[in-house]
Amino acid sequence: MSTPKPIPPGPGQESVWDYPRPPRLEDCAAHILVVFNGVTIADTHRAKRVLETSHPPNYYIPPDDVRMAYLQKATGSSLCEWKGAAVYFSVVVESVRAERAVWSYPAPTKPFAAIRDYLAFYAGAMDACYVDGERVTPQPGGFYGGWITKNIVGPFKGEPGTMGW
Image 1 (cartoon, rainbow, N blue to C red):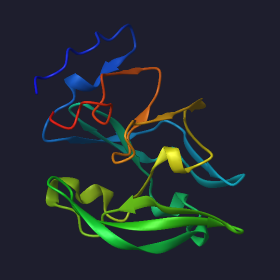
Image 2: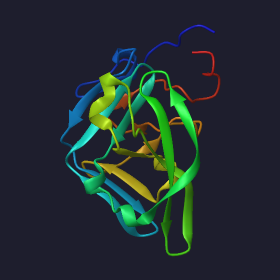
Image 3: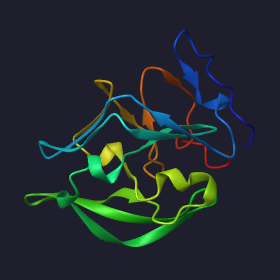
Image 4: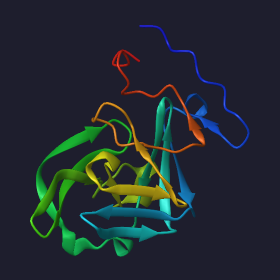
């Protein structure tokens, strides 16, 4: 399958096609907020962003800024060729559960050591996730966990017909 035609970014926008491969890790001072079942689960200005070609950013939140009492270790794991082995958590607030809605790298590869034990949330499994007050759109497809905001343009991996990218 051929590489898609990138959408040209406008003023103040980033194209996911300008992001590198292998991915880049960077500090993010934006206000990141995650809400589930009416409860704020995460609230930080100390996140880290992972930027990878064709993907909207993933935001990794320090565990000190996550209400860990609402997370339960979930079964299974996955392997990222860049970051290493991920573990998963479910979010549970009262009787409402979001299964495997959070992932983390307890022993990431050296280039991603700064996100050790940080937590990333699937926006589609939460009530809402925000970057500087803007409600994000989940990356399409359900497999990847990127967060789309108005300043990020695609097309994005995960949309129909993108598996061959």
